Amino acid sequence: MRKLAIGIGGASGSIYAKVLLDKLSHFSAEELRVGVVMSKNAKFNWEFELGNADYRQYAFNFYENNDFMAPFASGSANYDTLIICPCSMGLMGRIATGVSTDLITRSADVMLKERARLILVPRDTPLSLIHINNMKLITEAGGIICPASPSFYSKPKDFEALAATVIDRVLDLAKLKIDTFRWGETNS
Picture 1 (cartoon, rainbow, N blue to C red):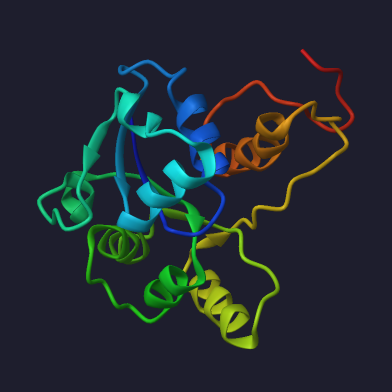
Picture 2 (spheres, helix red, strand yellow):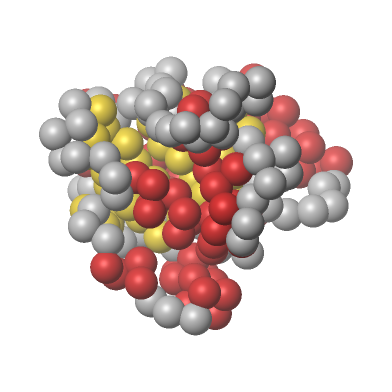
Protein backbone atom coordinates (compact mmCIF):
# COMPACT_ATOMS: atom_id res chain seq x y z
CA MET A 1 0.00 0.00 0.00
CA ARG A 2 1.23 3.47 -0.90
CA LYS A 3 1.16 6.23 1.72
CA LEU A 4 0.58 9.73 0.39
CA ALA A 5 0.32 13.01 2.29
CA ILE A 6 -1.42 16.06 0.88
CA GLY A 7 -0.71 19.58 2.12
CA ILE A 8 -3.14 22.25 0.99
CA GLY A 9 -1.55 25.65 1.33
CA GLY A 10 -3.17 29.05 1.41
CA ALA A 11 -2.42 30.20 -2.13
CA SER A 12 -5.25 30.93 -4.51
CA GLY A 13 -6.10 27.90 -6.62
CA SER A 14 -8.43 25.79 -4.47
CA ILE A 15 -9.78 24.23 -7.66
CA TYR A 16 -6.46 22.38 -7.95
CA ALA A 17 -6.79 20.96 -4.42
CA LYS A 18 -10.39 19.93 -5.11
CA VAL A 19 -9.52 18.13 -8.34
CA LEU A 20 -6.57 16.45 -6.59
CA LEU A 21 -8.77 15.15 -3.77
CA ASP A 22 -11.47 14.09 -6.26
CA LYS A 23 -8.96 12.05 -8.26
CA LEU A 24 -7.41 10.49 -5.16
CA SER A 25 -10.91 9.45 -4.04
CA HIS A 26 -10.97 6.94 -6.91
CA PHE A 27 -8.18 4.88 -5.34
CA SER A 28 -9.17 2.16 -2.89
CA ALA A 29 -8.06 2.25 0.74
CA GLU A 30 -6.09 -0.93 0.01
CA GLU A 31 -4.14 0.82 -2.76
CA LEU A 32 -3.49 4.17 -1.17
CA ARG A 33 -3.54 5.66 2.32
CA VAL A 34 -4.06 9.43 2.12
CA GLY A 35 -3.49 11.92 4.93
CA VAL A 36 -4.47 15.56 4.40
CA VAL A 37 -3.50 18.75 6.19
CA MET A 38 -4.91 22.16 5.28
CA SER A 39 -3.66 25.51 6.45
CA LYS A 40 -6.16 27.96 7.92
CA ASN A 41 -5.85 30.09 4.77
CA ALA A 42 -6.44 27.00 2.60
CA LYS A 43 -9.82 26.46 4.26
CA PHE A 44 -10.68 30.13 3.87
CA ASN A 45 -9.66 30.16 0.18
CA TRP A 46 -11.57 26.94 -0.57
CA GLU A 47 -14.74 28.41 0.88
CA PHE A 48 -14.18 31.80 -0.81
CA GLU A 49 -13.15 30.50 -4.24
CA LEU A 50 -15.36 27.41 -4.51
CA GLY A 51 -18.29 28.66 -2.43
CA ASN A 52 -18.48 25.58 -0.21
CA ALA A 53 -16.73 23.65 2.55
CA ASP A 54 -16.81 20.33 0.69
CA TYR A 55 -13.26 19.53 1.80
CA ARG A 56 -15.00 18.17 4.91
CA GLN A 57 -16.76 15.52 2.78
CA TYR A 58 -13.70 13.53 1.69
CA ALA A 59 -13.08 10.16 3.33
CA PHE A 60 -9.39 10.79 3.99
CA ASN A 61 -7.66 11.21 7.33
CA PHE A 62 -7.50 14.96 7.99
CA TYR A 63 -5.02 16.48 10.44
CA GLU A 64 -4.81 19.95 11.92
CA ASN A 65 -1.80 21.99 10.83
CA ASN A 66 -0.48 22.04 14.40
CA ASP A 67 -0.78 18.24 14.87
CA PHE A 68 2.80 17.01 15.05
CA MET A 69 1.47 13.55 16.03
CA ALA A 70 0.24 13.04 12.45
CA PRO A 71 2.06 10.04 10.99
CA PHE A 72 3.74 11.91 8.13
CA ALA A 73 5.41 14.28 10.64
CA SER A 74 8.01 11.52 11.08
CA GLY A 75 10.09 9.57 8.62
CA SER A 76 9.40 6.38 10.57
CA ALA A 77 5.81 6.38 9.24
CA ASN A 78 7.28 5.69 5.78
CA TYR A 79 5.10 8.01 3.68
CA ASP A 80 6.66 8.05 0.23
CA THR A 81 5.15 11.25 -1.21
CA LEU A 82 3.96 14.67 -0.08
CA ILE A 83 2.10 16.87 -2.55
CA ILE A 84 1.56 20.49 -1.53
CA CYS A 85 -1.17 21.92 -3.74
CA PRO A 86 -1.51 24.81 -4.03
CA CYS A 87 1.73 26.01 -2.49
CA SER A 88 2.09 29.68 -1.67
CA MET A 89 5.42 31.42 -2.08
CA GLY A 90 5.57 32.03 1.68
CA LEU A 91 5.13 28.31 2.34
CA MET A 92 7.73 27.51 -0.30
CA GLY A 93 10.15 29.97 1.32
CA ARG A 94 9.74 28.32 4.72
CA ILE A 95 10.37 24.89 3.16
CA ALA A 96 13.40 26.14 1.23
CA THR A 97 14.99 27.50 4.41
CA GLY A 98 14.11 24.55 6.62
CA VAL A 99 11.70 26.48 8.83
CA SER A 100 9.21 23.83 9.94
CA THR A 101 6.80 25.44 12.37
CA ASP A 102 3.63 23.58 11.36
CA LEU A 103 2.63 20.16 10.05
CA ILE A 104 2.88 21.08 6.38
CA THR A 105 6.42 22.46 6.64
CA ARG A 106 7.51 19.68 9.02
CA SER A 107 6.20 17.06 6.58
CA ALA A 108 8.07 18.70 3.71
CA ASP A 109 11.22 18.69 5.84
CA VAL A 110 10.68 14.97 6.52
CA MET A 111 10.27 14.18 2.81
CA LEU A 112 13.51 15.95 1.96
CA LYS A 113 15.54 14.38 4.77
CA GLU A 114 14.18 10.91 3.95
CA ARG A 115 14.85 11.40 0.22
CA ALA A 116 11.17 10.77 -0.42
CA ARG A 117 9.10 12.51 -3.09
CA LEU A 118 8.12 16.14 -2.38
CA ILE A 119 6.00 17.81 -5.08
CA LEU A 120 5.13 21.50 -4.76
CA VAL A 121 2.45 23.06 -6.95
CA PRO A 122 2.90 26.85 -6.87
CA ARG A 123 0.25 28.96 -8.52
CA ASP A 124 1.63 32.47 -7.98
CA THR A 125 2.76 34.68 -10.83
CA PRO A 126 4.90 36.62 -11.61
CA LEU A 127 7.92 35.27 -9.77
CA SER A 128 10.56 37.31 -7.98
CA LEU A 129 14.19 36.27 -7.83
CA ILE A 130 13.55 35.20 -4.22
CA HIS A 131 10.82 32.79 -5.42
CA ILE A 132 13.06 31.41 -8.16
CA ASN A 133 15.95 30.93 -5.73
CA ASN A 134 13.66 29.13 -3.28
CA MET A 135 12.53 26.84 -6.10
CA LYS A 136 16.18 26.21 -6.94
CA LEU A 137 17.02 25.33 -3.32
CA ILE A 138 14.11 22.90 -3.06
CA THR A 139 14.99 21.31 -6.40
CA GLU A 140 18.62 20.90 -5.34
CA ALA A 141 17.41 19.28 -2.10
CA GLY A 142 15.41 16.73 -4.12
CA GLY A 143 11.97 18.34 -4.34
CA ILE A 144 9.96 18.72 -7.52
CA ILE A 145 8.41 22.03 -8.52
CA CYS A 146 5.37 21.53 -10.74
CA PRO A 147 3.81 24.95 -11.43
CA ALA A 148 0.05 25.12 -11.81
CA SER A 149 0.37 25.88 -15.52
CA PRO A 150 -2.47 24.13 -17.31
CA SER A 151 -2.13 22.69 -20.78
CA PHE A 152 -4.67 23.12 -23.55
CA TYR A 153 -3.87 20.41 -26.10
CA SER A 154 -6.39 18.02 -24.52
CA LYS A 155 -9.07 20.68 -25.18
CA PRO A 156 -10.46 20.87 -21.62
CA LYS A 157 -14.16 21.68 -21.53
CA ASP A 158 -14.43 23.44 -18.14
CA PHE A 159 -12.41 24.75 -15.19
CA GLU A 160 -12.16 21.35 -13.52
CA ALA A 161 -10.91 19.72 -16.73
CA LEU A 162 -8.39 22.54 -17.13
CA ALA A 163 -7.19 22.08 -13.53
CA ALA A 164 -7.00 18.34 -14.18
CA THR A 165 -4.30 18.94 -16.80
CA VAL A 166 -2.06 20.07 -13.94
CA ILE A 167 -3.25 17.52 -11.39
CA ASP A 168 -2.81 14.61 -13.79
CA ARG A 169 0.80 15.69 -14.26
CA VAL A 170 1.24 15.89 -10.48
CA LEU A 171 -0.19 12.38 -10.06
CA ASP A 172 2.17 11.13 -12.76
CA LEU A 173 5.06 12.68 -10.81
CA ALA A 174 3.77 10.90 -7.70
CA LYS A 175 3.99 7.63 -9.69
CA LEU A 176 0.27 6.91 -9.42
CA LYS A 177 -1.37 5.08 -12.30
CA ILE A 178 -4.11 7.25 -13.76
CA ASP A 179 -6.15 7.41 -16.94
CA THR A 180 -5.38 10.74 -18.60
CA PHE A 181 -4.71 12.41 -21.92
CA ARG A 182 -1.31 11.40 -23.25
CA TRP A 183 0.32 13.33 -26.05
CA GLY A 184 0.58 11.24 -29.20
CA GLU A 185 -1.84 8.58 -27.90
CA THR A 186 -5.55 8.19 -28.48
CA ASN A 187 -7.80 9.14 -25.59
CA SER A 188 -9.28 6.26 -23.65
